[in-house]
Amino acid sequence: MAIQPVKYKNDSSTAGFAEAGDTIAITSNNANTIKKDVDQGNTESLNNAQQRWLDKWVDQDTLDYSDEEMQKVGENQIDTKGEDGEDLSEKDQKAGSNAAVAGAAAGAVGGAIAAATAAYKAPVLDGFSDLVLGGIVTGLGVANIALSLPGVFDSNLGERENQTNNAAGNNSLLQQYTDKMNADMDSMTEESGTYAELSEMQTQITMDSITNVGALQAEMQVYQAQGNTEKVAELKAEIEKLQGESEKELEEPQKNMETIKGNLEQYTGNNAEAQGVASSGSTVSTFLQAGEPMSKKAKACAALQMVASLACIATVIYPKIWTPFGPVDGAPAGIAKILFVAGGLSFGIAANTMLKNADSEGAAADAGDEMSGFVASLNENIEGQAGFTEEATAGYLENDEKSAETTDKTQKETDKANQKQGEALAGQQKPEEDKPEPEEEKPVVAAGGGDGGAGAGGAAA
Image (cartoon, rainbow, N blue to C red; front, side):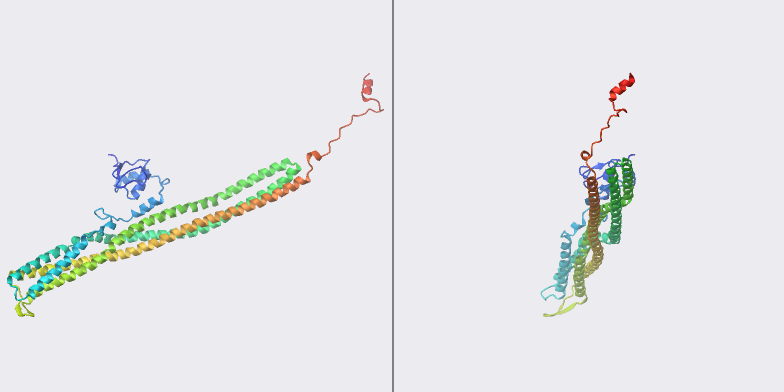
């Protein structure tokens, strides 16, 4: 059975590769692209077989993330989606919870008023009125129980409890990225010092090479002026050898300097990823902190419900209440009495539930406050790490420019000195046209002073 293709829930970060809803088979050609999308949360979660098959084909040496992709990788480290798939940042924008709070509060107030009316009723009210008020109280009490249920009082309370349970793990993750930012800053501090030393070493090697080669070139000029081609060739070979040795000596410091500068890309990517983590952490912490006002509302509702409960019980316990109209029988009888007891118990149950809601909301708010501290610490170190990266980049550039200026100055001074020597040597030599013509050899004259030709001929004769 073949490996299942990867299903996309968001568009790929690589333009044109895949859209939400597409299924893509993992191959050696697209493994890196799919790997980046998995890390960014653009795909459905991979099963074990898919993950192993992907790992088989991913080429770590060519796997490259943009800063934007790294930020999405960071955002994906902390889940900001509720169990229903809705983003946590949108959940508290709904008015359902406030409506439940208002309804529970109004019901509790209504119950208390109804109970008080029965207890302090005017003489014109009769037993039938007590029965009606008892029914109202019971209905409001039952309604308060319903409105006090966690999912009704706050439709997000269940998710807040889940996020509260996950808070420790998220805080640990936030701290890991804070530590990473600190480690990056420590590395850049060390690497900046190393880079300065390597730059100085490179500069010195280059300057020594320029000076030594210049000296040999100056010596070669002398031999060139003397026409000593053998010595000139010898010095040329020595110069080439010296230059080769210098280049070889420069290889290691230059390689190390390039590695240090290359690390800046890694630090920039780390910073982008940390920003994503901080963003998601902020979303979760804000969602949890929204439990604070809900906790206060729950406590206020519980207080009103307790008042209503006590009012109902008081109406049953104290059968006669003094009123401005004189002592009257304010105790509801029969069914009315049972209804007031049921109403009082209902309000009491609702109040107890509300207090539990208040505790859960308060715990969420506390967790949110704590997480907010971790987020703030991470953001502070993100800013610090970015500053270090900027300063390190500027420092490397400054070292490079200083080295280039120093070696360039040395080269120019050496070239100028050799040029002057060359001009001086040229001035000491006479031009070819100024040299005296070589004297022509005179013909040899035979002894005796006769015509050379005749003498030769006579001899022959």
